[in-house]
Image (cartoon, rainbow, N blue to C red; front, side, top):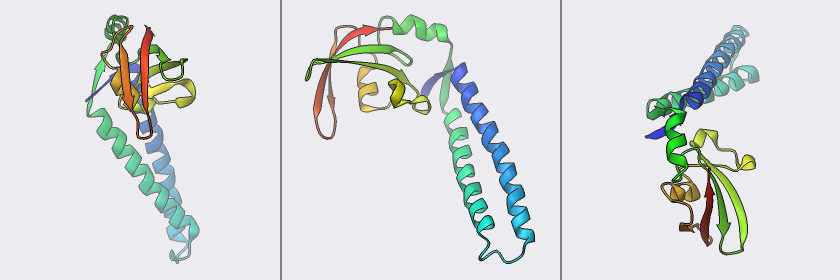
Length: 155
């Protein structure tokens, strides 16, 4: 189970709607290609069929995902995230290995955006931070190194 806000759920449902709309367009392309006859060398048909299959996989994945979430109100996160790290918390960390500061926000994996420092709650760093408080020190075991962080602030 994963926790998300109504806003995130709305975003996912909008994506599903968009994919279903695209799927209808692909069906039209496939029907047009079928009318042309020989499908063995019909690139338009082959590409459309592959795209259709990929869309089905993505739609089914998102539908399965929303069946395994818990939607919570922003007020819930606002109460919790000021005292300890939780989903949607913004964290300032001091890397104790190289004395640099890092800034992250913990988000559901569908909202991950590395350029904006939004990391998944299920990532090694994200999962290690959940439930921690200001001034806690955490150790992250990555495949190629071990990193120690001190939690400087939580917003």
